[in-house]
Image 1 (cartoon, rainbow, N blue to C red):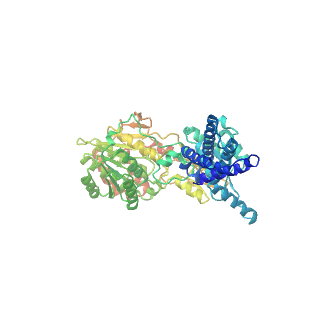
Image 2 (image 1 turned 90 degrees about the vertical axis):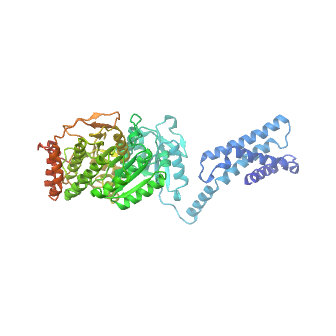
Image 3 (image 1 turned 30 degrees about the vertical axis):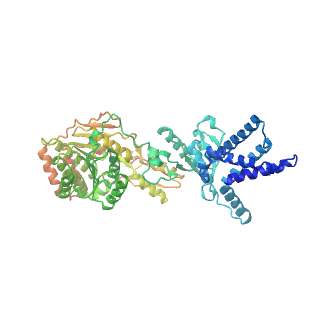
Length: 621
């Protein structure tokens, strides 16, 4: 109705102006003006003008209105020329439609016009000037970058952002204007542009590029003094199971280049599809992600076992809400209590067991070696024995690279867990495919280095690193779990799988990059303090020892060790396992020595342990 009034009013204004120089009778042409107004509304409707949310539109909306008005003008003009009937002078039509266009745009953009006028009134008459605006450089002048620029300019409180320009590698976009800001260079000029324009914030808004290219952009951004943010991928935001921020901080996954991978078609995933599954440690970092990803394999029943009541409760609520058709059973059980675990097996008869329950923090378990033995070794032994008794199809132990040439109680306990599976797999009555999956650190797990660094940077430092040359392997939790599931399908029993971890990462370099991504300078704005290796820690981790020969599988990121001989005497091994409870109360060094006697029954010295001791002469990088 408002658009009809705009057209009617515009035509009458033009008609009166035109009648000054020519004799025109308005009363005989009102019906023509009314018909023209109705036709205009119909054309606007066809062009989708009334299907838009104009409070959130962009310049493209003006183009749509312009096209509709142009079509209306052509229709009226064509009718007049073809029929030689001119109920309205063409000058009235042209000027009336031009004035109508101004009215349509003004009405639809009135909120911005009013807010801009209000801001200027406060600035001029009340001296209420805004705070200095954040100067933003957007990397990527595509749809994501354009949408970001519009939002920063029009939807940010008090207009606190100023988009100084865009960076884009497309030569056709150079020096072009996008949402009112110029494309000022390519990725090679990020540092120079950031310095020249005194950029406070760099936002990376590109997605359809390779991982190395994305990391190259981040590296270029690091050389500036600007804060760095990333626009999440639109599809990732749509698929997200929780709220996603409009802008996010750069994640370690971005820096290291680890990402969640999809199902690998060459691997037959039928062995884990449509089964009764049991996941221990389900409330932990690995266990909870295992629980989430296994839901896509449509289990007939999912039993989630953990002794963490709050964590298990939260996970249960999340999964039941997202997967109402799947039977999800919580089991508030301690894996070290044989009777309680047996009751779970008797009640649910699991076909696939993922054993992720374990104590994992190396320094903590050096203080409490008895707990490492009780939970890691005892819990694994309980579950594996029950898996054998109940003829579980597949049993997957979540192991660690710290089990290789172990220098800590935690690592040694996990190596003994691997040997427990190896020994049970030799039993004549065994029908279970026992396997272990070994990998390094996962990004973002509770208590790990990444959240610790983030917290220390938030607190203003110092960021603590154990040693200048210490290195670790990293992968994302999602990728690790994806590969664990694939390994469970590849196992033929009595084997160990090693996940391809990529390049080793120097911890001090990771700390420096995380600091720079906040727009801060390592060693100047944020101190990095070297604290020394703690008891049980190595300078460098390994994924297999000298006697293990990894072989390729059909999956490019999974290797297998299945022709391995630990030199174990079965009877003596079980005697030593039974005796663990008696010597677990010893100090950590003695407990480690006893565990190593189980791992190396011939008492061969682990030379790798010596090689991993810190070089006290090493200097900070």
